[in-house]
Length: 332
Image 1 (cartoon, helix red, strand yellow):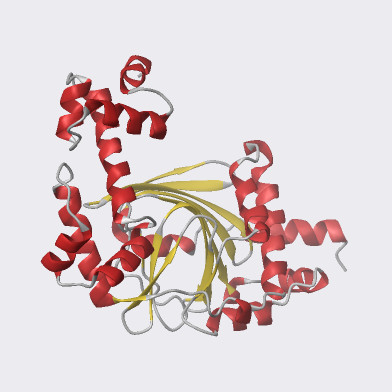
Image 2: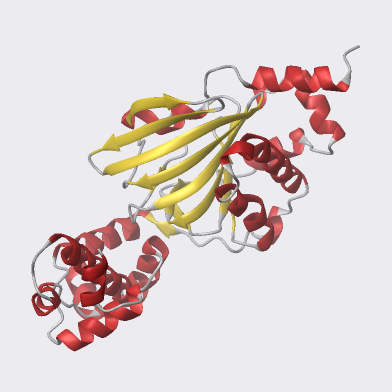
């Protein structure tokens, strides 16, 4: 019989098999690959933007991926994946999740979601083209008997976790301290201990899922029909294209034939903020880029993004960036 050290060594060696199940989630956007001792990195690129991912093999059948996305989507043709469970944590940005008959739900910073990929594909998009997060995949068919024994000794119930993933097309757990404790530290751990730390955190996650009561969160999922999503995305595209102009809720409601209440609720659900606040920040982001890349003076930049009063622009920019536009330009 193997001693505990030999058993642990065999389990970890089995995890390092040189291939990744998780890579199939990202589709054809992958362009290049780099490797080090315990991870592989990939660059993603398509017409909607770019992204980068770093993959770690944690245990046999279990992988972890750091996602850094600045694109609207990375894979629209994801296929079912055997006995795989996908778990996602959103650190920054927003993620759009499709479920049911054309129903959509949105993850924001701090949220956790999970689903089974066995019977259906799971499509995710990034409506703000900004998403940082962690994905954990569990391929139940790839978990070795030795690993199952270890997990059982640690009170991890794999059958319960698999049952959870298949209860509905996906489950979202809104941000709380327990979730944040598990995932946020993965972004601050020193590189030289990251592999071991990831393993500790994944075990912690599996224990939380073993005892998770999803009934407490069943009423918290706000979803939107596809028709509303499409209309709100048209509104977003229109506003971004005409960002220097200002439109009232009533004008947008009439132009796009959607009620003001539905439009405001759905827009905030998709983009994480009210139309007014979202467009205010978008204009300031354009201004920030112009301060870095153009020779326009502050008054000209203010006018270009729709501020008739340069002083109001300066005040808004200072509130958002902590310094005046002039000081910001000098700094960069």
